Length: 180
Figure (cartoon, rainbow, N blue to C red):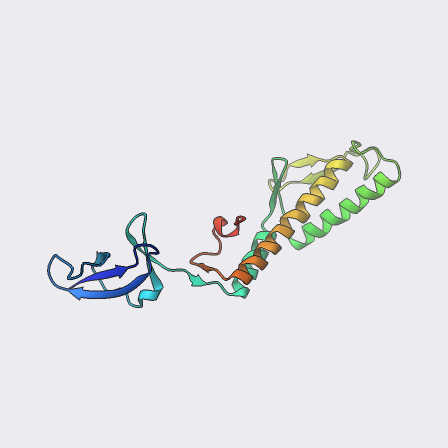
């Protein structure tokens, strides 16, 4: 037994399936032929570019979106060619160092000074690869702002995904989290 999947040529949505014997599907409507039944037609679409059957996405739950948001927030970010960790304790440390940098700046420390935290010792942050990245006052403040932006971007993207609803097979895909 062979099966014809009848679809909308504009959207790829499946409207019906037919079982038939032989080589020719008994329908003039747009269709593709598959070897086995597909079950619920609402769980499938026809990819109009490749003319293949694709399993439709399942609506992502708010909980699933928040779990992936948090995984991404705590998964690190790139800053000036280095990758940095962003676990909760890392974000707290970044915030604390930024406060120290602001205090140093407010007491007259030049923005390009590297030994602003401990006199005589250049300040450095440990990157994800365990290398030391030297940071003057201005760089530390920019680093803190980048960490905040990393987190805020993901929070607002998750909000949009929850509000708009999302049919997706895999929330971990970067394309899901890219700006629309």
